[in-house]
Image (cartoon, rainbow, N blue to C red; front, top):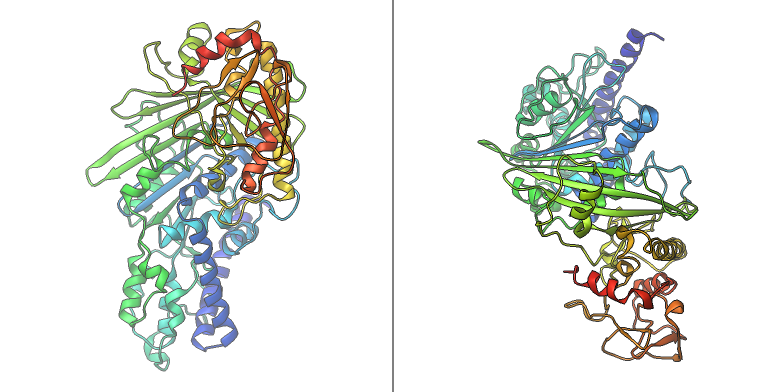
Length: 612
């Protein structure tokens, strides 16, 4: 099949979408109860799924963009630039990436967008295959946008088309079609003005019939809560009629995007750009004209706005707890992350996060893969922000995908003086760089339910979480992931303790792996040395204990396992007062062996002064 035949077949899909939309409008108008109930249930399910992802909408969209980037790198060349751009406007936001195209002409992709609880990526109820390399779910990620927006539009460069694919999802098309089928004289001219020439049916199919050709009847109330993701509409990419549409067209067109605000702009045009409108005025005005109220949650829930979305994205914002630097690193595949805050007068703020990896150095352990990860954030009008991490991955645990990030930011200036780092600039020794010393567990992003158990390292794994991606349970799968994580930390502790003999870079290990006092997070209690043994000062008492003395080489990392005067508490029955996560976190940290302890008191004391 040559290119022209592929184009004809692809454009024929536009007609299929038109026929489906027309048929649905006629069916709902006729009041077929099963179809009306199905339409209502689909709308309710979409909104429920979005509600479960409130606060994580942007993260879901970034996950989907990341997966397209990784797929493109796997298919083509790993050196492909992995770039994501987000522009925040008053009307909505634009998200673009350099990955695979968003080919809605592919039936599987269009179905993944439409369906609820299904995806063409992974099934969380099944064992993860070792080759699984996706993070999010296309359908889940897009449905989460209902928490901040009413409608969205996709622009993508698809190989089978000579022009960008432009597809819009809006409730206004089906609502207006139902109204016209009910004999109401609503204006449909504006809706039809941007239709693609091939978005049409046969001579007997009319999406918006003339009002005088049908009997007038009441418009069903279901119009106030119809689903968004079931009815794609093909639009003409030459008629970009809004600021967001024009921005998307420029992003997917070579050389047309303006990125003058960035010192190091994107290297190429983007493959896909989509925009989310905070409010669909066409649909809401239509409902008002018909005297129909939107579903309660659609009407009362605050829409997104430019400032709140920007505060969630910005690296300097206190609201960016979900989108932290560690999350972008765990995603992998993302090399550059560009964000802009665009007001009436132009760009008001911009940030560029560069993530670079250096795998030139290895560690002598067959179960460990090691890389240094460098992050540089260029913020308009400010000095750059730097972060640096040691990243360790378990080489023999593909089903759990466990890895750990250890924050090495305070040591970055010293490292930059001795080796070349892959960043456009480097910090000076006078820069005050702080280390993050407490982390919850991560499933790419922080798992909120684990915030009560804090680690001094960022432990990531394929944990099982609820649909809202926050709830965390003490089940068999999570225990298995944590057991692999426990092994990983033990390997890191043992290996780095040996390496610290010969290299200044490693001399802060294994002390960086020591957890803070879980009973008092308001201030970190200082671990101290007494009689060649470990001690943590903490309030409270331990129950069901059998106490024995241990030597420094036997002493594991303490987490509800240590008491004063060098005595180790070997708990019997777990305390019922511990939360499920706290019981799991005990399993991780209770197995980590510290070597060469007594010889490293001074190193530890010096390292502790680096902590915040």
